[in-house]
Image (cartoon, rainbow, N blue to C red):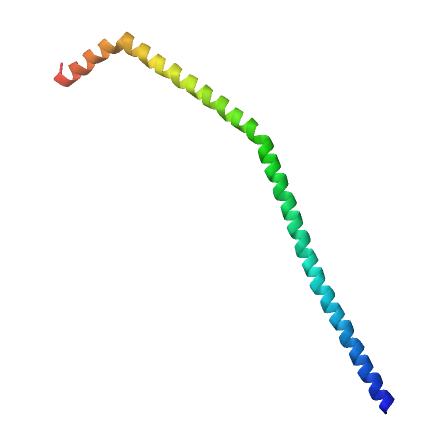
Length: 103
């Protein structure tokens, strides 16, 4: 009977030890997974930052070229409006005055 009790107690102790070891392994695995996830996150962030810094000069140059083109287009339109005013300004003034005074 004593041997049976001792066996039961030993089995219980071993079962608790196995359970405790499994719990510790679970905690360790969760920590490792968290660490790996953070490493992967950092890796992707670094890669994204590297790509951004690599592409920034190209994007800046493209934006600058687009700005220069828009500026040229604006200048052309402004010059065209000035030309139209020189050619037809007096006519427009006469038409506006005539409409205002009712002629």
